[in-house]
Length: 609
Image (cartoon, rainbow, N blue to C red; front, side):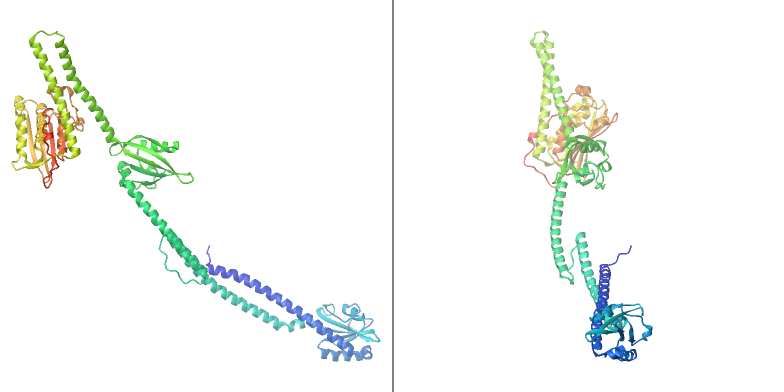
């Protein structure tokens, strides 16, 4: 349905009101003019009748012929119909009709009053002429008694006709007033519409957050006040918007720097805010999840179950859940219900952090304590048993005593080796933490030669070929003593797990900014499931074989920490039945990197596996 503008609505309304009002006024004015004309005509006609009655002679009035002549003369002179009526109501003369044609008039109200001696004027309907007339009757007195009545009459339409020009002027003036008022209303409505349109536009711009344009020239001062109020309101809104934007930026900055995942959902469990840590932890980096529910955004049954429980219980909740995404993760998660100022529930805040590494470290620590206890308990138990045997005097053969003492000595050496390796690891970790490793530019070939030379006898004893490849010009920023011990551990390990007649190779490969030293054998190899834990302390692939070939179970862990102390890392590649390749990867700095202290404390590292 078409809606008209304010101007036309206002104009139409006022046209209707003004039209009806002016029409009513015109009708009322016409009626009052007619009433005034009638009153004036009655008064004038009454005076004329009285004057005519006084000037009439009784003899003439009583004689019909003379009365007729007199009535006609008076009618022409007075511009009215003149009728003479006798005391008994008989009409003796009429200026407009023969008396024979007129009925008896004694019952006429004006005649009755005149016969009673009172001059009277009335307006009434004439049944004879079937029209409205104004009548005025006055008594003709003879010796103080009314002997006849003279009556003057004028048709009402004559009076109305005489007033037509005045009535016409009333309607003309009313029409002109109507046109003037409508013109004024149209002009005022147009200006009011213009001012209203400008104000509505300003409100629309204000709601849209746009800058208000300069105020137009309003036709009404009230709109200037409204515009000033709008500008003040806009300034307040801008300040509040700036404040909210600042708070929003600060909140985003805080959320982005928080390492814990943060998700905020509304009362209908739709996500309204999520930080970068949560996206990374839940594998949502490229997914737009704002406005989605948790089940739509996070494809994790345990996560969804926790969210449902948090909503169902209606109180803070915490726990540990597993997340199966791109990798297996453990989350420590908690929920907090949010309420506004009137304690109305508005949403829930979920905060979670990954504890996978912490749990793994806890497991490693638990395994480490168990392994250390086991590794120390075995030689201690052996030593204690042989000492008790010797102290008990149960052995007399000097050869047995010597053999027992040899076993005690070997187990003591094993205890010493384990303790030394543990202390070495502790010193390496302390050096990494305090960054006290001292690196010097050294030729790599002499370090590799020294490592190979130290292991040569053990290789010869098993008929294993031990060779190395390294350019004489290759140099690196290293701690020579620590690097040599790491290589000795790797070479010794390769010899132990190679078959007799096998081959062990030490190969140094130089890149643009890195250096790799690989110790490769063609021994029994390692299954894939063990590779991720091979550098852990006391981790053994085959515990029985490891104890047979000797070693503390800490050698590879020491290698890893030495590589890390150099700013590098250690890796392993292996295939069962084909051999293994352990590598130390070193990243070379652009210039010598010296960190406060030398590495003498790290020189005494274990030469045992």
